Length: 133
Image (cartoon, rainbow, N blue to C red; front, side, top):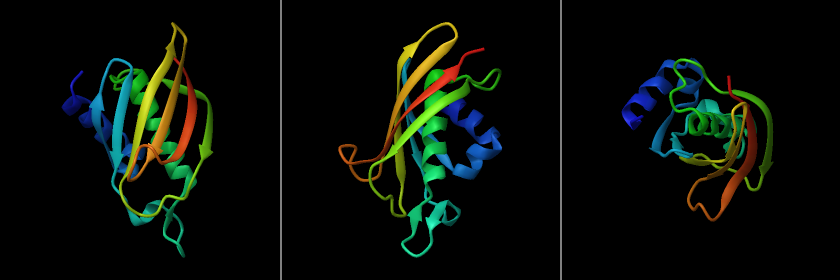
């Protein structure tokens, strides 16, 4: 599956369009995506910080794409997630790297980190589990 096809599929999902992200790289067991900042992503209008739910949703989208890049037919269904917020995320581009740590016949586990300027200083990290149907 190439990036152009994956990004075309991303643009067909209304919530993914709301998040406004693009997949930058894709492998058999990983995906990296970049989300462009939009004022609607703000959770704290005084400090202009990303809303935590936007960060978690973006990370979930990257994880789902890493598990099943051809999600146009049957998407992976999230069944559990844990997100640790490590530092505030001011307005600007946000990145997420999703690595599939285990993929069986019915369940997949994916670890995700999100950062802004440096991957060594993550904004959040999470563990996502998906039901594969």
